[in-house]
Amino acid sequence: MSVKLYRSQRGIILERAGRHTLLEDATWDDLFVSPPSRNLPEGGAETTIDPVELLAPLDGQEVWCAGVTYYRSRDARVEEAVTSSGGDCYARVYDADRPEIFFKATRARTVGTGQAVCVRSDSHWNVPEPELTLAVSKNGNIFGYTIGNDVSSRDIEGANPLYLPQAKIFKRCCALGPGLLLADEPLDLDTEIAMQIDRDGKRIFDGATNLKRLKRNPVDLVAYLFRDNIFPNGCYLMTGTGIVPPSDFSLQGGDTITITIEPIGTLTNTVEGL
Image 1 (cartoon, rainbow, N blue to C red):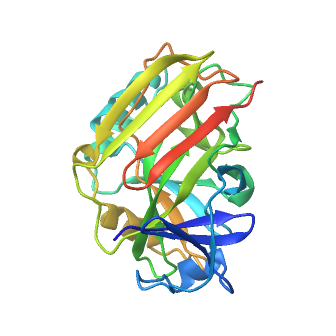
Image 2: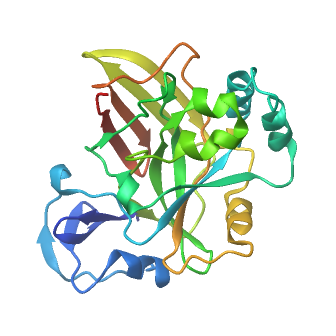
């Protein structure tokens, strides 16, 4: 049975078998310290989900990312770095034992479904990166999944790999949602990740991939993240993207980004105009 949790303005909402229950006396940080099983309480106030009320599903958790985990992202990163002296570093990362892992966001930089993401004003090549995102407990165990959008400035990163933090970390650079799918087992490898981008009422991009194309094992990615590191409130780890818009595409104000991963749901965000 699919069990999902949503962080809302009213508190944590549990979805099970089509019913929505408002959980009492629970905080979002509690989930990452002592992850719940699927045997969540049946009681509680029955409620409904209003998308307007949904918040990004994190509180004290940091958001981290793994990069160059799909062959398509490897190609894209090599392409964007052709003018830099480190242009071949992404090819080396793809084949290396150690994955690329980097810090992405805190709650203050993260938005939920229905909210607007931002792009950098000093960049002319900004893209969304749709990613399966792991919910990881403080002890390093994967207990759930959500959808992530790692908004990135490809021209800044491509100019020099050392500019990665500026290409990745800025206000509202990250979107998570719509909620958290609890799972005892890994998602099926046939699970599809799909993204659409609309502008002025027209579809301008449509792409999809699946988890079979993810080169890195999620458990291994988490193990590297937790090496000599601590996450008292647990964390989220995005697993990289396999969907890359063409090189002549850049996000514009007013664009709508829709990312779907079943059985998690759909994450929808607009782009704030510059």
